[in-house]
Image (cartoon, rainbow, N blue to C red; front, side, top):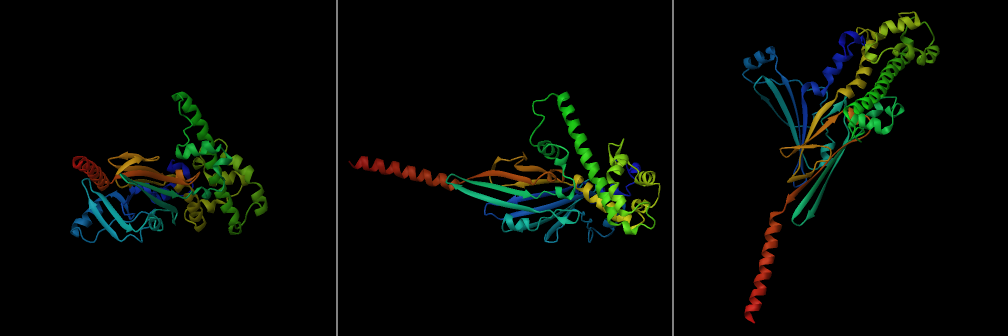
Length: 359
């Protein structure tokens, strides 16, 4: 996105400020053998010169970095801030919960001011020599934020693959074949996004039509012209953010009556900007989710295991077509079970030898 061509007010700036990825936010979940769990949320920023000077002047006391807009950590009672080389400041909040179910009631991530919804379960199965732990957390889909569903523009599997990578629709293809298929998918998803942003804008104006002093057409006529306006406004543009809306509305209606909706200095302009940012912010949301389970990981689901920790890409895009499922299984060796088994075997052998010797 190019800032100078947007003219959708300060949309890009707001998205960047609200995005979790801008503050390098990470969430870590630790499952203990007794079923309790710990959730940690950390975010990092590079300290500015002014902040650095202020910090040293206070002797490291009383300074803390601002909390990103994508976090809701009211329930997290433990925190600490570390400063590493390069002036990177990392603040970590943590809280211990009695169960995964209780943990999900205080999910620290939020999108557009609303806490992300998730449900988690822990299945613990005793297998004598081993205890199997299976953890599952399901984050609720947020795709209904977009009024026009992506499945109106592409097949369900195409939509799922584009946003989540599953099912793998390019498996076995050559680079050229995959590129051609991906380009076709992208054009469909781009049209879906463009149409949604246009509809958000158009519906907002229609809902606030009474605020227009001298509208060139009635509200009813305005609504009836939606398809015609969309066709002309989006014609020749691959990205709606390349459109200059003030000029587009002026050319179509031969009036500047709608200009106030695209002026960041007006209350309606700010409100429309937030409506658009709420849609786009979903696509910018990105928080790496890491998971620690007791024992040895035997199945990481869609995650990647690194140094005994499972890493999952928790992004807003993955929450668009459906719920996002994080699941993994680990195995804890019951050493005592081996000891007991060996003792029983030795006892049996000893008993047998004793009886034999006695005869």
